[in-house]
Image 1 (cartoon, rainbow, N blue to C red):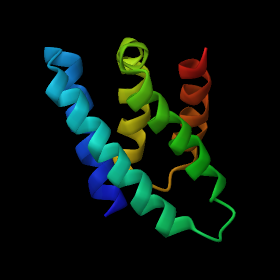
Image 2: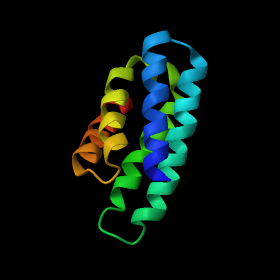
Image 3: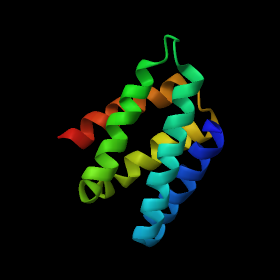
Image 4: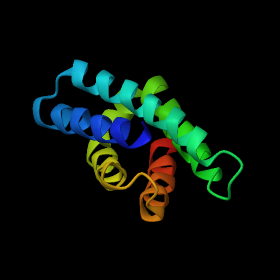
Length: 105
């Protein structure tokens, strides 16, 4: 479930990047939430559980500051491209942490 939702979020964010249609952005946000929830269940009570915190903060930015997040769509796409290929890729979560910092500035 996490893998499929990460891939779907990636596709929707790529579509938003190409077209600028807000519906693609919001579908991407919804798929990101599905990915985040499924990932949380996957890593709960493991040493990777902190990755969920990064995801949760990025999700908050996607929802609460869409204009700012949309300006960083290249970064969002780059992170989701990694995770769409492998939802457990540590490099993807390192990039998610970087994204979290960029979105909070």
